[in-house]
Image 1 (cartoon, rainbow, N blue to C red):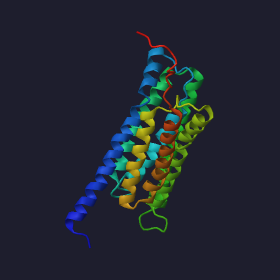
Image 2: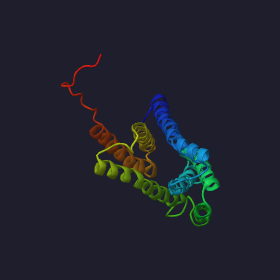
Image 3: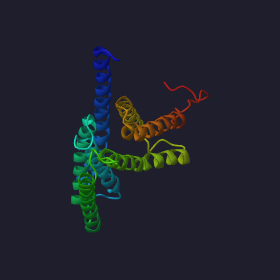
Image 4: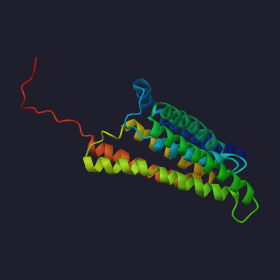
Length: 235
């Protein structure tokens, strides 16, 4: 049996891991701001794609639903981080639609509507066909959807990893963004492990591994330029 002090320490560690994950996720949420400042300044979306923000919004909404008490109890920090993420993604998508040419505007608006329709269907199905007492519970149904959504989001880091290996350059993989991604995944991996929640620790465990790979690649391909000692000193 655990003493009350051990239980309190365990709870504090769990809460600290979740809060750390929220703070580090916020760093990732604000990272596209320079891109959208440029879009607003130039009044054009140029060659930027809005699809990553559509995928990110759907991912945040599904994970937000998983973190709510009506689906899963005791993981409210999952709901808080994804509610903030959903607000940021919706803000970015709105800016993109406002400044996009007509064809892109219509396409992005249609995709945004599709995201809300899909999310509404998920809510309806999980509330109508799954309950805490059924064989496949509501938590299990939404949990597997959130895992699938998070794993699909890892396509972006895999693309970056492939690009770095192919070009032998870390130009398109900012160090602090990779570090924040790694630390956030690690924090939520610890949060999920402490809560014994497979649907949290499994996808974030994969994210942690990909984060380590990115940092190792950065260390390997960001060699400082060598100084040629044969060159004369300048005064």
